[in-house]
Length: 330
Image (cartoon, rainbow, N blue to C red; front, side, top):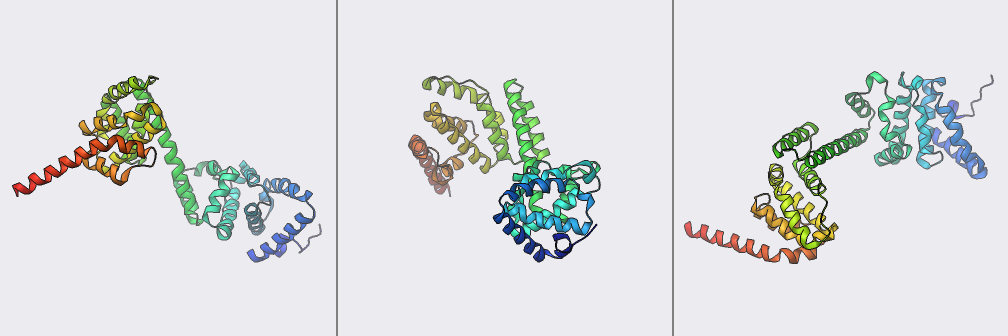
């Protein structure tokens, strides 16, 4: 076999030389367009046999691959083929991918790393890069942090959190639809929130969604208002259990606002729902006033501002009288 030094593996001793070879390939592609499609196809074949290269040559291959996927010279989903048993068990696939991601981060930044993972489809397959006995969250976290990729760890935590939220939301909806005792729903939800490290405001948002999706609403606007208030009264203790902070109350207030705007039959029901939550001490006077002043979301604000004006005036007047009485006592 005749070996030549005029190739990436022999000549590209550092990243700068790899970049020089990258330019050679780019010029060839511009001149011979048919090579563009062939490159992705040939690289797919090469990625299946990474073990046939020395560690040094695999590193150079990873570097040029990183430049090509980052520039679009080869398709990102070409990388998926590195995941096969004979390359995974010895961590060859993992080490190669970490080298690729390292160069992408150096050249394009952390956001480009996450973009590449998503476009390649590897974002949901990262655990498969690890040998079976090492596919634990802790091992994955340590590997990516050691490789200087903390953003991947954050991204994976976000995916896990999103998955947990979906499971909790689904379970909550089933519990409400099955009309399980409120005390049991509260207990189970608190356990799930604690186990998955969720915030109370995330929980109250899920409660609102689950409660409002548990009913087939009347099509007539005047009847749906009465139906909504009657339905919500059944879950006051559930809302109260997850609105112990002003942040949670504000989230609930804005969820109600968004829902009433998105579902036009509820447009004139917003102030009635807020009043119900106020009377049952789910929402406090302070939070409602804060919401009205600058805590609201943009959706339908002009409509709800007019709707709430009389109630807000009454709250402000009551607050003012309370302060005057307090001053007189002093």
